[in-house]
Image 1 (spheres, rainbow, N blue to C red):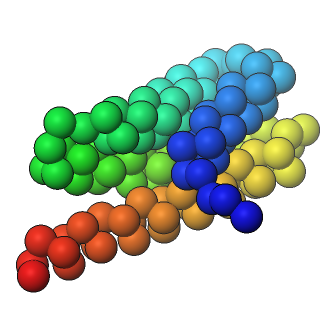
Image 2 (spheres, helix red, strand yellow; image 1 turned 30 degrees about the vertical axis):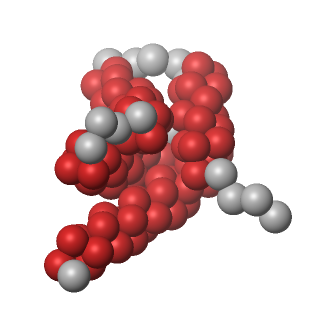
Length: 118
């Protein structure tokens, strides 16, 4: 089975969009929704840029941003899942994927640091 991280990140971003589109925007969730959309779509944008990086340093920096954005997305999804009962299961699935992406980008970051130390 071929593993394609870019495909997984694209799917995650699109699933965020499809889920958020269903949620009625209220005064309570407006900022949270905005933050989820920014951080989740930033993962995709930065990973795409990492794959076209002009240097190893540029690649490492973009991967680091992906990790941070995945962690931030996890935080905002966790808050949103607490106030959106109707979509709690969908949001929890996205939360799980945000956590897994965070761990993947964390591993890539540490692997890059280990290679630089040699």
